[in-house]
Length: 309
Ligand SMILES: Cc1ncc(COP(=O)(O)O)c(C=O)c1O
Image (cartoon, rainbow, N blue to C red):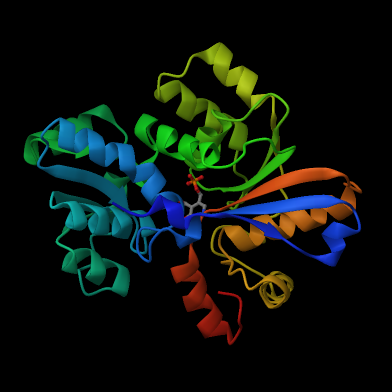
């Protein structure tokens, strides 16, 4: 439905990499689709398949006022012709509050605005049962597409590449993308993850997700042993950025024409180059997962008068 063949694996040619004999490749999931780009379709694909197989009316999911996941769900359900419901954090909001919510609504998503207190119960069994009763026969997908079907969708990313890299770099929000990819890596590959939230316990989150998704504990531990968490690249926390980060992204864009966003992929690419310098890395191959976020990146680039997206 969305063309995964658009997601090429592209080699980056830069003098700083060549002189260290580092082969850097980027998996360009940002090229999948304008609305449903990056990891969004990966996390939704098998959830959508499930809803269709189970003859559900549609998908019910959760998100904040600017949630890309909500927008992607609305777009995917619209394209397939099934219904979508978005439970939105903030009872003061409406469909006219911003473009994300407006576009969700335009694509047929029924938006239900709930208080922050109620929203915090979104993963509780009792709250989900209430939703199932009220909106019967909808497939309920957690915020950010963070469930078993999201994991196996993300696992697919790596299977479209030669999958023989020494290192993989990927941004983390809910950890679904990184955990899914981790399930596909060969023994020789190590994964470096970059949480974009401050004070985020990446290992605990990944363990939790594996646990909830029915992945065997011994397998999960085995996989997590191959993960290095780079905790110092959140740049102040979610959605925060510095001039240094924007300068880095602008230079990277000038040299490669590959767009990045300051919320996820910019921080991760910055971490990658800093890690190379700090640990004097050489003679290896690295795969960077471009998880998208370009729409948001464009908005920030415009606001800051920069060119990086
Ligand atoms: C552009 C982008 N990159 C990375 C991530 C992080 O992915 P995950 O939440 O699966 O860890 C997100 C969040 O979904 C995102 O929107």
